[in-house]
Length: 440
Image 1 (tube, helix red, strand yellow):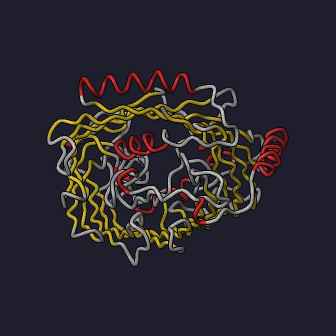
Image 2 (cartoon, rainbow, N blue to C red):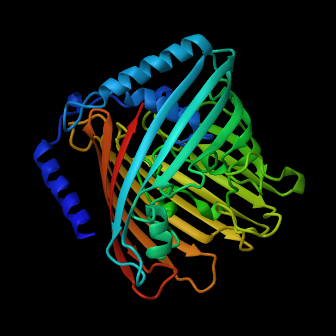
Image 3 (cartoon, rainbow, N blue to C red):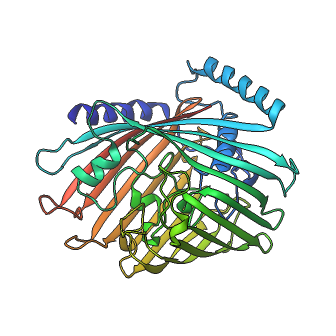
């Protein structure tokens, strides 16, 4: 743990010598348009397959980095040529991304390890079938996800849940799958905001469609489970379902999802025959946007029938219940580089893993004017766990993400965890993280 903290400190010192003072507005890169960020509003989660493809394409155009040369560029060139050839022959777009996290904690339960490492890999694609290149394009989307750990014996996500004994976690997605690779998404999708409607059906991921925000993802911005998802909304796991939205102009939509409450990401389509469903109705509004890249604020009302045998899965405890939640976003500057996000969720009847959850996030893009792809973020999270005997838990996180190489993003992150919900052994733990991300 001491070696890990020393390495982080050394990297921050090196980085400080490479950052110049703030640049003028003329030197800053223009905002990334919506068309290069993926879906707008409904299902705009950055990890959704089509959105991730857009981000991979956009990231490939960025050439700046603290170290200006990348040794993996030849590999990237070969894979890009392969992708282009596949698309020309089949209209199948492919993308690959890797996210690696080292994490260590100052205080853990007695006898437990205080550090861990894991990789989250995403292989995504869309097969364009109908009306190619138009707002009503029909396509099949898929997402193959792989997660594995290393010789530490525990991944960062379980380090937070088990060893730091948190309810809100310290590293969403960074834990091992067994088997290591699964098909997380496989669905047919058609439409867009430009068309005024969109729908999808197949194997879908509910928490990648409802209450999402393009600035919040554990792979490139904030890390804790409580800081990256509104899990007080009792989301079902990936499984069979259908989602659709109707847009009313540029600033409003109404969407909904019906999914198998017994969905399990390790199964193809769960247990639809049991008749247990998760239902969510969402309204999205752009409230006083300052730029065309402003995200929607979202309001959700949901109900779950629970699981067939009352077993918890994903954000659902297995019980029948309901709740509401919202995500509010506002751009604080005229250029949209500073963004504030507030989130709150409330569940009833013990149906979600959190009775209540609240968070506030701030992000400052291009803070030093040197890089096109850097951001400073800070967030404060509060979790009221559903489970008996727990206490209110608080987490403050701050991070800086920057391009270490032209095609490798590095994130230095610190979390202060107050009152871990599942222990009375200690009241505070510092959590340090180093994340590396690249895509092809």
